[in-house]
Length: 62
Image (tube, rainbow, N blue to C red; front, side, top):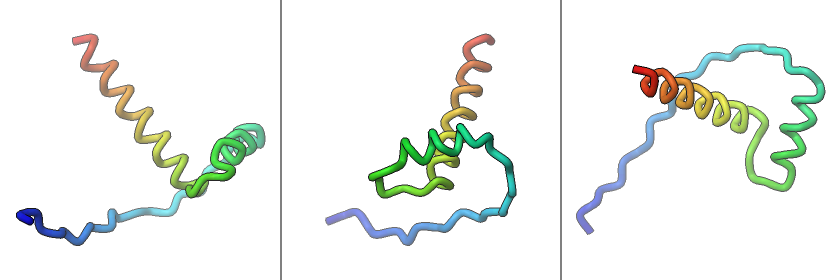
């Protein structure tokens, strides 16, 4: 086995308090119900996806 185990680095984080409309909270909680994820993990993944999508749109217009 040539691959070596690498200890993952925990990314730095900063706590931010934001307000969500109640219907968005309900929709996210409904989407993650029965999964092994958290509200925060879902929001982080969705935000990263949105940022990547914006970058793709910016580079497509060049």
